[in-house]
Image 1 (cartoon, one colour):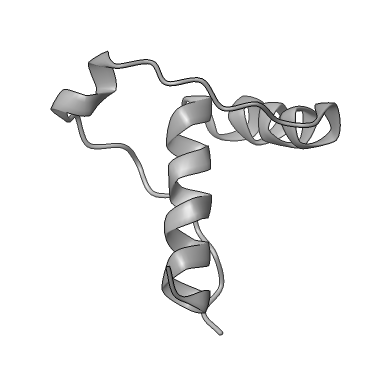
Image 2 (cartoon, helix red, strand yellow; image 1 turned 60 degrees about the vertical axis):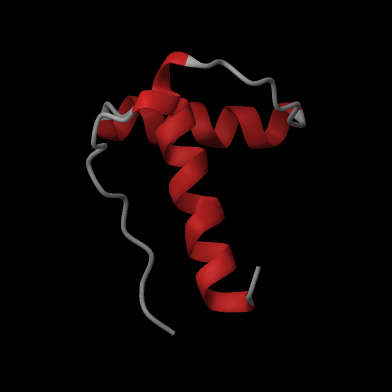
Length: 59
């Protein structure tokens, strides 16, 4: 299995839309730590995690 790494975001048209995703406070805190460490937006971190999960486990 390839090690997960965050990529820098590329601007896209969907960035202007703000869908709502509800997370447990533990997940939100973990994502907030990644945001502070990387400077990436939360949505970009979440999208990359989901892309990685889908690529590894189908989706």
